[in-house]
Image 1 (tube, one colour):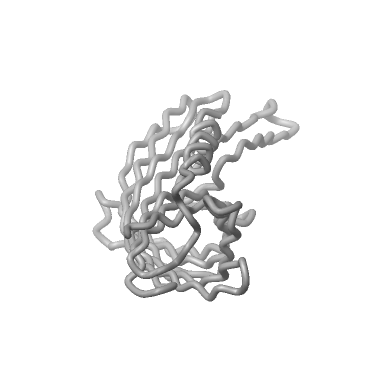
Image 2: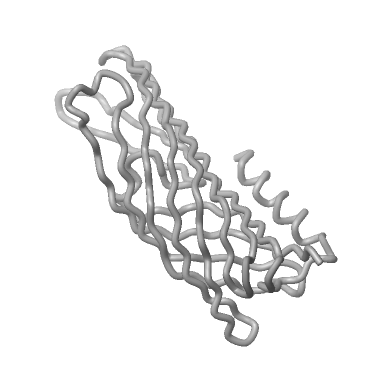
Length: 218
C-alpha cells in the first residue's frame, strides 16, 4: 500500500535529523505520527482497523458465494509543546480511509478529526512511560453504490474522547518509538434527516503505534 511507503518515508526523514535529541524539557516541541490498531470487533464507525486488508466470504445453499474485500488505514499526526518539563499540550489530527468491494458494488468511508491532547511523561532511566488524555471533533463521509440495494451517500458528525498509558522508547539519540494502550468513547450521528437526534456511542480499546521526535527550540 502507498500509505505504508509514506509512513516509512516519514520515519526515514525523522531518523536523519541528527540535531534532534529525545528530551522532554520545557520549551521543546513534540512531533509524532502513529496509527491506531483497534481490537477485533471494535472497528465500527469512523475508526477502522488501520493498515489492514481482509476478505470475507458468505456461503449458502440458495445463493452463490458472495465475497467482500476491505482495505483501510488511518494516520494520526500530532504536535505538542512542553509547557513544563515532562508535560506537553498539543493538537491531534486523524485521517481514516476504508474501502470495501464485492460482486454487487462497493462502499468507501473517509473521516477527518482534530482536537487537543495532554501528555505527561514519567522518565525511568532511558524509558519514558506516559499518561495521555485527548479529545476530538470530526466528520465522516460514507458512500456506497450497489446493484442489489439502494445506493447511499451520507455525512456524519462525531466526537471522541479518551486516554491511556504508553511508553516512548528512544531509538539512539535521534527519535523514539511510541506505543500506547488506550480506551476511547466515540459518539456520532447523521447530519441530515435525523429529526429524533439519533446517536451511536462506541467504546473502543486499541493500541497506537508510531514514532516521535523531540525538537529543541533553544
